[in-house]
Image (cartoon, rainbow, N blue to C red; front, side, top):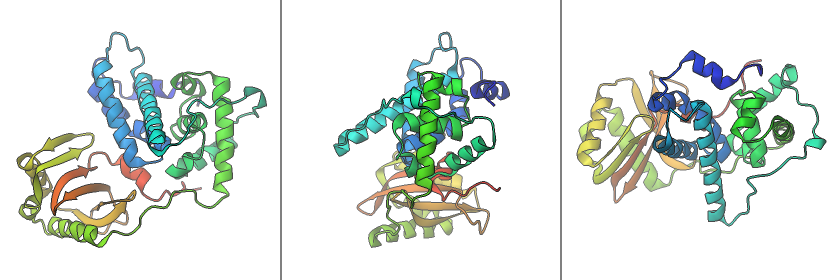
Length: 316
């Protein structure tokens, strides 16, 4: 697979107009999220990082000077993820070396073509987000880009601003560490699995009204200063604007809501198509004084749920 660049193939499949950053961002957004969510160890934080990266890109993009826009966007997302990790480390009083170097002379050969490579890729693709946090940053980046997203070695080196031998070193060590972690008990940090009584009552009230199609009742729950975010689509502010959001759901009849805990946060799992076994997406709600002050709906960013749900290995 390394004879041609992954991003070149992607561009050949669905080439955006050279100056159409919006189209480019929409096409790459799920892949950017798969990368930064694993870098940050959180699908929800990953979506925040993607939004920040795309906002920065919108202020900097010049089609006359950006020769490889896909790689350019990945670099911005990569740097945004590193900035997030630095900020989080400062908040927690931790020291994190984000520029860890690997000794290339100690490198064992890296299989990038055979059955062993397929097994490594499958292991990386099914690893929990928190597992990646056990890898040094450079190793984490190399494994995610090469094994999870399928980029070529030279492209991975370009994105990480390094060379192919350094990528091979980081990839070898990262794969070795993932195998070690796979033989241990789950390393995922404990998260709340139950809602506090007050949280459950609020979410259940929302779910009951939603499932009964009582959208006027839901509008009654909105605070005057309520905010709505629909990642990858739009945002709104104020009771009047956000109230229109429920009008869109009134035209959909196969969606139901169930209270749940989403990466430790109270929210709703949204199911489609009757008795679906797995939720299609999630909605986070924030309350103040019994009123809704923030709705974060991932209906148009369903790639976020891929990392939130239990990961199943691909069939043999």
